[in-house]
Length: 207
Figure (cartoon, rainbow, N blue to C red):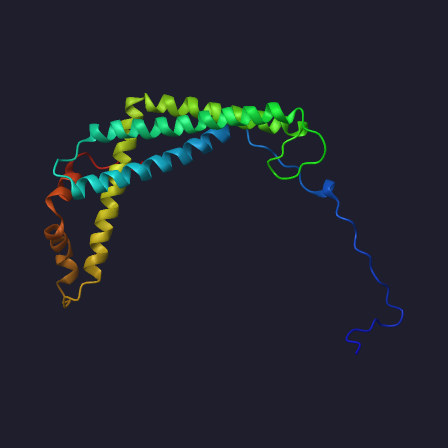
């Protein structure tokens, strides 16, 4: 059974072959902008790690919150990220040296050849720059203190939000005074450790 029949006189239009040159030129970001983006991701990762440690420490520990303890932890986290970048740079350097001698067509995405030399060198430079900048931040007391304070603010806001959600799920009857007295009930639920966390440092200044 014929489902589609070409009309008499209708011409078949041949598809044009794909023209790679018609694609817009890919503009590679500068090394500086790539480093800035990498540092932004590293900051996010560091804050998450510190936030989790602060929450666990305050909720399960007996000692009061001490910023200097978490400053030491922050430096360890930053050094670990720097070392990771340094190791990555060494790995890419080895790949770049081997790529010079490779012949034929690549068999997979990591089968590098001489044509990949410039890209591999850029990746090596980026990893080395990241390691250097992360170690600069590790040794910058002001940056470390700010990182800890931002993580402390993240921890407090997350805990406070969890308490609010717990209150919202409560089966207690609500009356006209519910919203007005909500803050008072929250203060009664916040433990002594959480209060110490809240008062341990000035409020984050929007960072």
